[in-house]
Length: 174
Image (cartoon, rainbow, N blue to C red):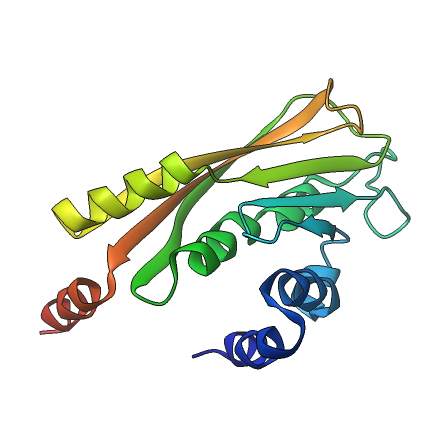
């Protein structure tokens, strides 16, 4: 269990998982450097919203938001969100990511991360049948009105049954 997981486990008992997720990310040095901020987490963890404000900390040479800041603000959310939704019986890892820049961003950006109950059910069913699966989550960074897309991030996430994954790793080490 990582340092951040230990803090989340303890803090969740006192302030609840959604608040711990929000404040834990917003206060952690690794996420603060992205300049993104989590602004809302639903009670069931199925919906998370972030804001990436444009500032001197993330402007590039041509005065737009640096692409690395866009990616860093989006990168950890889908995986950690899914880990919290599925629980400790599953192994969840980022496998790959792609970023597609659509236009330069000269304003604050927003993203919405969402899992549906049907999507979670499909993941659980797939893991129950095959012991492991992969999904692709697509996230758009948009303006506040959500009518202009500045970039899209596609994340491939690996999910496995925990005992199966441990056995698979043990076999690969031989």
